[in-house]
Amino acid sequence: MQTLRAILSLVFRVVLLGIAVPVLLGDFPNYKIPYRMPPEWTVVTVCDVLTVVAPLLSPRRLAFLAGAAALGAHYYFRHYVPTWDLAYMGVALVFVMLPSSGRSSGKHKWVVK
Image 1 (cartoon, one colour):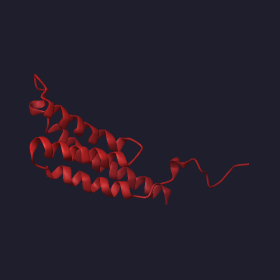
Image 2: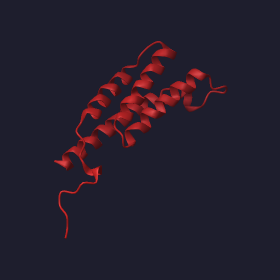
Image 3: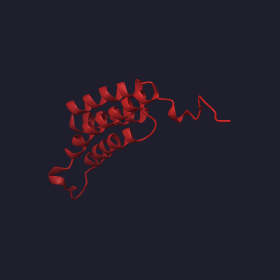
């Protein structure tokens, strides 16, 4: 059962990365950084980078919090919510609610004597 949960967690992490990377690359017009880096571009890009990095980190709730920050930044600065952000939030919500595999708890079911 632990293996199935670990595989499910890995699948959700890959899906979250697959959703977050196109959103991040959409903030790079012609793949270059703007000359003066306006604050709105900086905040939106930092939030999008957090959505890419968060699924790779151990606490699952960071993926949801990073998605909420990106959703808020996109709405505040651009006055619309991209569909990809809503998809990310849906997947992140399911990812956070998955039961943990119990591998990192440090408790062993068997002990070699």
